Image (cartoon, rainbow, N blue to C red; front, side, top):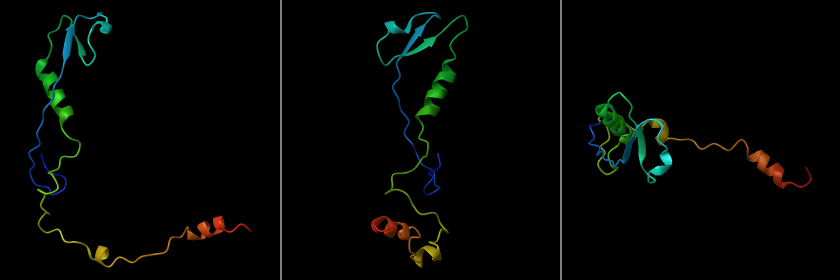
Amino acid sequence: MICQRCLDEAVIPVSGEYLYAIVVPGTEETHFPQGYDVLEVGEEPLDLLALIEDELLLSLPIVPMHPPEECQQPAGLIESETSKNAVTRSNPFSVLAQLKRDPNV
């Protein structure tokens, strides 16, 4: 996968443990221990490849990233001048705070 922080390749470990109970349609789900996912299998065979693919996709992180100590800043990325020379401005809502404190208003 591509690290979204440094845009370099990242190796993301993917693992999972899944518990399935394969049943025929119409079986009550209350008979199974907690934590089992129930798969109803009728006349058609179970598509095991699609099931594994879905579980792998669900276990991938939403935003893949290296650990922070492994990330490198992308080449050509320079800190912008505006962030270095940032001007502090007064809060426009500070007047409202003064009105709230003044009991005569």
